[in-house]
Amino acid sequence: MPVDPATLYLRLYPDPILRQKAGDVGDVTDEVRAVAARMLELMHEAEGIGLAAPQAGVPWRMFVAYVPPIPEDDRHLGDDPMTAHDEPRVYIDPVIVEMSGDLEPYEEGCLSLPEIRGEVRRTPIVTIEATDLEGNRFRETCEGLMARCLMHEFDHLEGVLIIDRMTPMSRLKNRSRVKDLEKQAAML
Image (cartoon, rainbow, N blue to C red):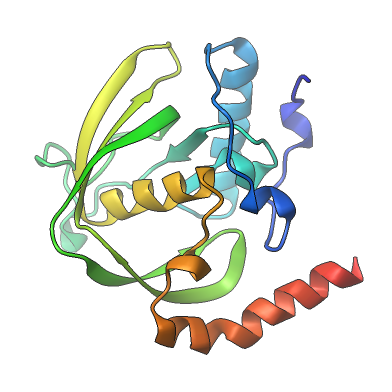
């Protein structure tokens, strides 16, 4: 079924699509490029650094990310492993190849869970393979916030949310906010 990018909008928890495992995209078509462009718009409008296709209502294994260089936050272009993007990127049918380092706690938020932030433990380095908008496979190894962003967006493709990965204390701290989102959705 074709997707009209103009109809895409940011889905909020507990929208059922956020819990679905996304399906492979396959060939990169004009439709895929148009959906990616709309996802980038939605991410920028929401002032995020990443957005997965399920968050836009499309059950595809695709996400967009843009972690800009900010030297005072130790994010520079040219770092190895990468810590920043030079421009927004699209990751189609991504696969996590390797995660390395000890789990580190860091406060994360999510565009689909407004006003909910909590500590999530992730590895500091990730290597990911994906397809770009020209249909070429690529591999990158990322560190810091960029690695965290890619792992967060990859989780969305698996139907996993930050509330599933939060430390027990953060989960407890956010319990009433999560219930509020569920109540709001039930009233719609």
